[in-house]
Length: 244
Image (cartoon, rainbow, N blue to C red; front, side, top):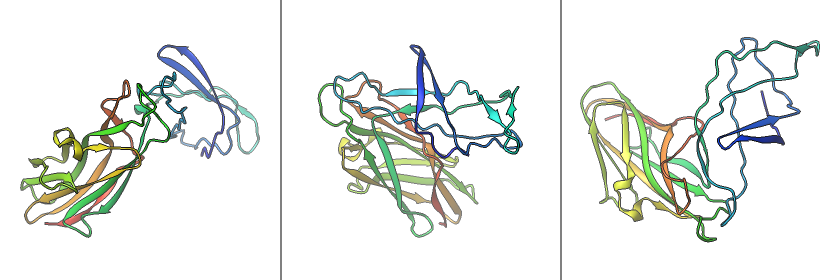
């Protein structure tokens, strides 16, 4: 298990490819079955006005290699290790980071209420030293149920229940297009937050719901290459289980 690597060496190989070398790893143990899942954390520089640092979208880890591996018991070096199956999720180096908290779930309420607050750090937009703003675009939830009756889903900003996104179907993915909301109900500024409510109308069935971890889509206004960004949470967020 990799606990922390405080330094790395980055080499630019081409306009679209770079290599990152982590050295002096501690407590990084390869399991006996040869299967390993790990997460790469990148801490970028602040995006200042007129700086070279930019938002980078749709990045992947294309290859991984391990060197100087030794047996735990004997400290003898291991050679000839081949990675036969490797895949990577896409990720983005963004100028903002969302923090999501569930205020109400289906275990305790007939409505789902969650809060989104964004960390902007000291990042600035392309044209001035002002802070960017977030333009919420899409949110997806997954649902499961015990009856095939159709449901009606509504989502809205808690400050304006008249501005509603309506969805009606029997499939297990519900996509809310926040871009159809009025701007005041989908724009989030630095040091601010918004609460959103999802209500469900269903009859005589048990239903469970989750906020899908890789389907919070947003734009960062006034920053180049910062449209339709997906934020990947570590896992889906449980929204509860209830009979309607």
